[in-house]
Length: 345
Image (cartoon, rainbow, N blue to C red; front, side):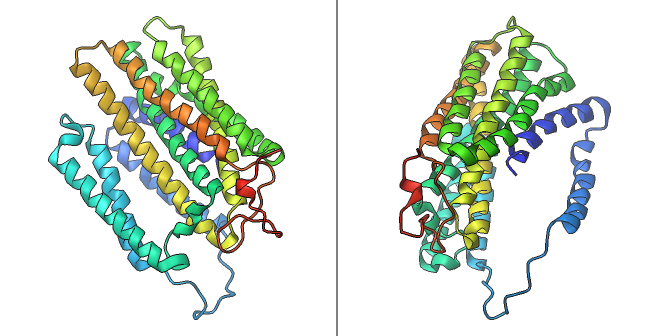
């Protein structure tokens, strides 16, 4: 599952470059029709149906109130972040209004979830687990790093180095290859040594790559940039698979759907935040009269900061002794030991 998080977004700029250069611009949207149909057909074939073992009386009810609060809250917040890249930034009235509305809806959901307990759409007790909180935080920061780079690097290749759109997208290929190769290895290795040792290493690789971008200009060797992109992909692979494995390994079975929802919501919020901040930094640097090279170097420091945050947060992930959590949402061994708090060997 971890492969799709960094790999699929890398394929997007490549496909987008093909569409922009060779097809009508409307295909930027129409391409989602066959992709959506393929997803529907594949889901009908490969996704198993739930076992019909529960009666209607014992089946958990959908948290309609939570859904009505949490869905719009994140939608409005993502809208605010996407609109903040305009000329007025976060000071624009529509952005401020959306931020306030999204925050109020989120606060309302937190109050509702505190009352609903285990019946909440995403129960708050999950966040009492240090391993769960560290996992979703790392995946949120991974969204910041990945989508900041996916926004920043193609623009750098086009505006600073003069590449066409398709070439700029293709130059992200080493990132996807590195991630694709590292993910399975990292997943198997994390079963042996735990996520706590792999995720910080991945954060360090991305940090070193981001530091290279802070020094890059129009004369930087293209081979070096390809190696940097590959190292970034490897770093993301070392982060993604172990972190997701740690999350699923320490959640009770009945909480996996809620934990998955929380993970992907926070990851997408991180992606929106990363894109918005990078765009704002680039715009602010340009408005201040900086050259394009200086603007991109300055914006890369944002990615460097996110990577360093992953490096530090990764040390709070569980070690190799992490096991499936109890039904109450607190990772514990049969004897009551909290593996989420236990140092790794």
